[in-house]
Length: 82
Picture (cartoon, rainbow, N blue to C red):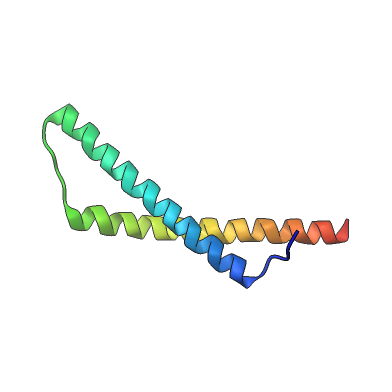
């Protein structure tokens, strides 16, 4: 198993952010479709849709990336001791 380093932290953060942005945009689009079929009104604000998604996804993706990196770092340390 290769050593976990700072480059891996950057990769985890970038990939987690991309994943969270995709999930958030997909979730927002799904909510828009459900609201349209329930009410018959299609409310779409591009600024709120994109910037709201980016704001939430970048915060969650960064935390997720750091958490994954810490998990792998702790597993690496445990294997070195054991």
